[in-house]
Length: 361
Length: 258
Ligand SMILES: Nc1ncnc2c1ncn2[C@@H]1O[C@H](COP(=O)(O)OP(=O)(O)OP(=O)(O)O)[C@@H](O)[C@H]1O
Ligand SMILES: [Mg+2]
Image 1 (tube, each protein chain N blue to C red):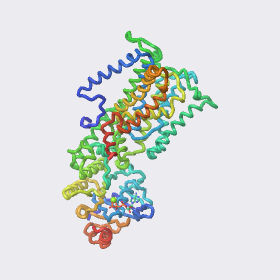
Image 2: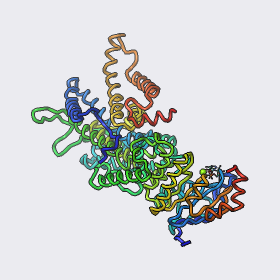
Image 3: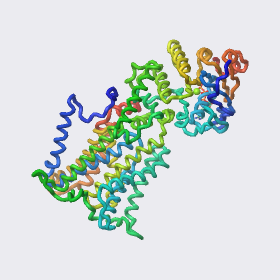
Image 4: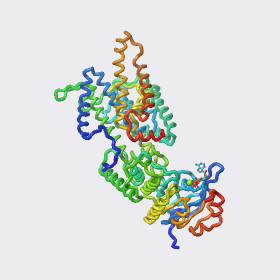
């Protein structure tokens, strides 16, 4: 039906895409087992990469498709995380199943998204950035201080002993054996996360190539003309905002369950900026680019952490720069370099490259 | 002359920018099925009239009655929804989208697929998407640029861009098509082709409101013409009468030499 539409998201180029897909599937299945050779910590790193792919693709709908600069995305992640934490932990003694709480968290995040977006989406882009930035901080501060007079969030200590995701007797927290292969907890979460990531990839792809996706693109290109075409630009933007927020909420819930612990610290402004950087660095609006951005920005710092310490000790006999500062340093440098030499991102869509080429003229 | 029913009534529409009275109590009526010309020297307020009509500007005085209903034109998308489509004097296409995609955006208003349809690609959505593509192809054919369907809008020639804008406007299924200087920058052949196109659009049942500087084109096409000068309507009649009106001649000769 859309065969003649040239702009289709292509994950793997080549004439025989199924071959690529098979290869990709094989790699995806192998990852948690290969990573486990280096210890479960590496499986967790892989898990976080995928969680960030999920988050970044959620934000991509807002930033990449609708062109709205959201600097407070982590607030929705926090809403999802705390929804899960409060409804599946000893903190209130409530233990609802995940299939109730995850959608609930997504719904709540969505409501927050609409509440924030409805009054602000009329504003110009830069105002939206400031408002969302403020919102992100407000949510975090609330989480930090809602421990008195009634202890809702347990303040800075956060909430512990959060239930893992459990389907009947099958818990994601323990090791279990299938067909003679033993799966650790993190390995099981890995496959859950891959499934979720595939879901968000499909959602991204299909949205892009739809009536709604075209409306988003039209708004990015020329908002006045889009309005004259009968597009209710405010509602369509709000839709993107709410969708992004919902995905943030789901990611937050999974994060809670996987970690078993949440505290406000996980939802700092830096986190929002990191997720945004994944989208921008990889290539706004381009699914493979965003995935690349997410993998690079989660994988590299971890690799650094594990690689740089032995390296420094070997070279200098002690630690000269601690990995955390080095991480920030490299992060900043990478952003500057990419913006200087590849302003459309590391792996941009041809679309975005054209848009940028045009504004450069 | 047989009296056709009214489609648009403008009642004492006023709009000013600071001290500039861009529109000064402009009233006019457009009948269903006619081609109505709006002319006047540069800065007379023609585009401003369009912008008020389509909800891009809020007029300070007066009101519009469209198809028997008072326009609540506080948002452009509402004007489009009741059946007023327009083109822009300084072409506003979605440059990095293909020609056919531009027209497909024009179908937004008359189609319904939402997020869930987009994600699930259910049969209803697929059917609708197919219909959008077909209608867009038809419209590109209609304006005569179907060979360019998959070119990016910004790569089209000037004349083709004007045509694409018309196709996109027609995609919203308007009752009134408002064209803001569609022949600007066109050569003789292109202008002639445009004349044929506009006549065809009118014959197919869409009322046309035409702003144009090309006097020959306006006089040849329009059943009735209104002349604006410094925000005021100074004349409204059939072309033959307008051409001989002393105020019109003065406005044009007094301003720039037309
Ligand atoms: N957004 C605006 N802000 C301030 N002044 C405006 C604005 N739009 C139009 N004007 C002024 O209103 C008057 C009418 O302008 P308008 O664009 O409607 O003229 P026009 O008849 O379309 O002229 P042209 O033939 O040059 O397109 C002009 O004096 C113009 O400077
Ligand atoms: Mg004008």
